[in-house]
Image 1 (cartoon, one colour):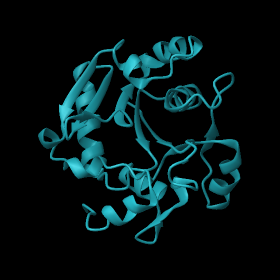
Image 2 (cartoon, rainbow, N blue to C red):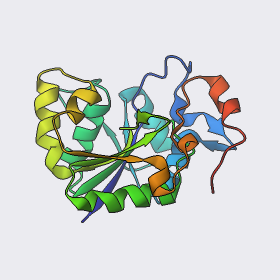
Image 3 (cartoon, rainbow, N blue to C red):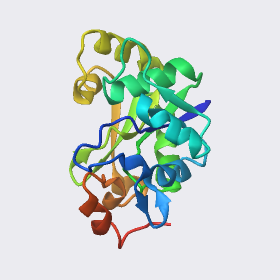
Length: 195
């Protein structure tokens, strides 16, 4: 199965106060930690005002949401990736999850072969759909939901066959799925980096 790696970096970062993707943690922008976990190759889904900044950082695979779904959140980003890059499975990471490890990504990708439409980890009792793997067959479901302007990922997940897996079952630590939403979160995750 051909994998495609996707980093979602099109959010407004309103609680953070500036684009989170470029915030430095341990001398590296947050999105680059995600790119590292994905093996160094990734499509970056951005918004128009950030595209140039990504390209100036040396990124060549930068996309903006497909029309008519611009600004419609993570589902629009996933749909755009599926529309622009041919693949069988799409590993999706939000740009603000710098603790995720390559081993965790690899374990999630292995599980998608079981016939599920998606493999979504559960950490600390919460599903993590923005650190998950999706099969290409969900593209039409995403499209139909976007056309109805239903943007909640939970609504999407309720329509497909999802294998939820506890973080510990794949050797992941629950802290790997921590999102950086505020600048103070950078200090909170300082003790962590699971190499």
